[in-house]
Amino acid sequence: MGAPICHSVRREPTAFSRNPQGSAFPPLRLPVPTENAIKPAKKTPLEPTSEHRYTIRAYSSYRAARRLAFPPFLMDKGTPVMVTAVASKNSAPKINTSKNNTASRTTMAKKEKSKSTKKTAPSAVTKIFSNSPELRNTVEAIEKQFGEGSIMPLGADHICRIEGISTGSLSADIALGGQGIPRGRIIEVYGPESSGKTTLALHVIAEAQKAGGIAAFIDAEHALDPSWAKKLGVDLETLLVSQPGHGEEAMHITEMLIKSNAVDVIVVDSVAALVPKKELDGEIGDSHVGLQARLMSQSMRKLTGAIAKSKTSVIFINQIREKIGVMFGSPETTPGGRALKFYSSCRIDVRRIGQLKDGEEVVGQRVRFKVVKNKVAPPFRTAEFDMMHKDGISYEGDILDFGVEQKILSRTGAWFRYGEMQLGQGKEKARVFLKENPEITEEVKQKILAAGGFDDLLTSKTGTAAETDESPEEDFE
Image (tube, rainbow, N blue to C red):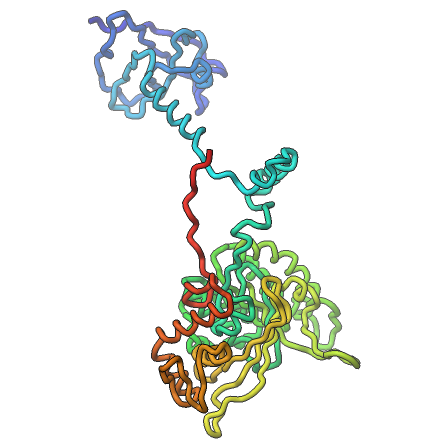
């Protein structure tokens, strides 16, 4: 077998023959295989020069070879070629004399066929709009332009299932609909001073951290007590804290945290302390009518969409004020305008209704939790629980009260019983018993949830909405 005969082809550089770096192609040596020329030419090591060296192998498309900017007079339309640069300078050019790579083409054809004929479950949009091609095409165009999920049937599973974060109180979770604080929503918590608003928000943060989430606290009042937060179960190492100088800074920080899609719950404490920058730069006594309301209105318009997409729960703690000259109805109102009231999915009124004493010493307070507005469950539900000065909301005490109300636990005199089991004489001893026996506490909790009709929460350990595993997709004809 003889070596292939090579012909030198030299041409003048043109715009068509320039490589991506802008230099003209050097003279090319194209092998012209003879009938018996199967083996490549003798391998010779390439010297490191500035010349461009190429290998030639059979290619299956004349157009593809054309796109490589190879000179047309060097291509045979019957046997198109593709030019590729030699990667290594120490390797000799190789010649692929095979005219047809049937095996590779067959394999690729099978892969393309398998991709095109893969069976997938029909989408909900396809099922609903199967009888209306025009509407179906419109919906598909909307999803293509604005992204998947921009429009969808209301009965979709990921819309119907509202996930949440526990408040640390079972009765408060049930008053909110069973799931606790809903995710992806705005929540306003307001009430008088020392009623437990910040403590409630810190309990939500602690529950989110127990589930592996990240929480942030925007301390506009500059009054956060780290030692108290630690007693409530908050992990100070992972809690993000910001103390902004003015209201615009607080809202910008909140917006950035929300759009990061990495934070589960954000607490802003409080709306009344969000001072607009213009008011902060002015003098005391200057009139700044509507500045804070305008700030909150702009912030709500900008944040509400991002909050829904990120599934972040944003809790705004607010104070109360009294309106002057009100003759009928409640004179109480909340600062910050009306925008927060409209954009909030839940508005919670927290008030202290009594003191808890151990002898003459006050050890806690009784708190009433009223859901004034609720977009995810029936509103106007109330809950009462003990908030201890030592460790915050008494979860076990809440289980005792709710269990007696649902007749799952019985109380005879000062004794609390669970079936034939005596929990203790007096509420404090029964509470300690449940705290030392968490398996009994969990059993009573599951029965309370079952009695209340919250079957989807029976497998939950922290009071959050239980997630169900999606079944694998089935093949549809």
